[in-house]
Length: 332
Image (cartoon, rainbow, N blue to C red):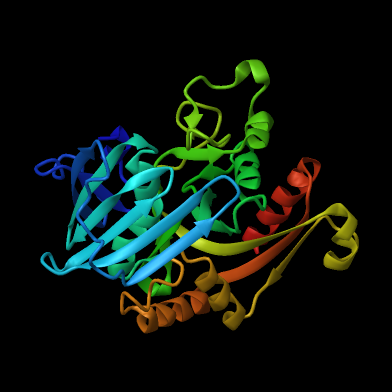
């Protein structure tokens, strides 16, 4: 079992049978894990069963196939992953059985986002594709599609007075008085080479990095062992920012008064649509019979938490200005 599973993740303590008392970490939820390593694709046979939901992502260097099935006998769900790593997560109430192929990317890579998101969404916890960052004892989220600057901006901020909380997903927990809170993910960030180069000189590159997938340049970096600050406690959620990066040649039409960063508040209806589009589970909610309930939860969220757009110019030289504008906006 990957040792990361022993650490709290998005407000959930994971552990083998009998371990959860020791590893509870005062989290809202506990999930009992059981891991099975497979030499071949000897998963629970789903070939004769129609999935209730499928997600196919065909990219330049990989194809991801995600399938979701009803597990009738256990009154739960089977989430099947076929990508650089292959396997299944079997969820039933407060237990997860992991059946995973020994070859390829480890199950932890998929569990920390889409796997746990399935279990939490069934508990009523909204899971959004975003990074959470802590500043002045509260959290804000940076929401953006992949390869649009989210990781680079997060990395810069966490070198300059901010603290990383989550990588690629936030789980939003309702709190008292219509407030919300966010719990840290595992202290690991997945960085592209250009972001690593911004963090370290070539001779100082950390030796504890490894590729996210064998064929990818993106690497996993342990935040505890390198020069990035990581927040280990839950924080009240302050603001959700949508990143809108523009190239320098186009910024005249996107930014006012030649600023390199402009922050605007989005309407509630626009905010709900964007949060739906950035859900970790995509459009699986109808198949899970929680679609209506989830839209109501999102509507309540945006009526209490502001969702804003940060339009900013591409380029590392502009990151200090963007940081200042975020600090100024959070203070308002």
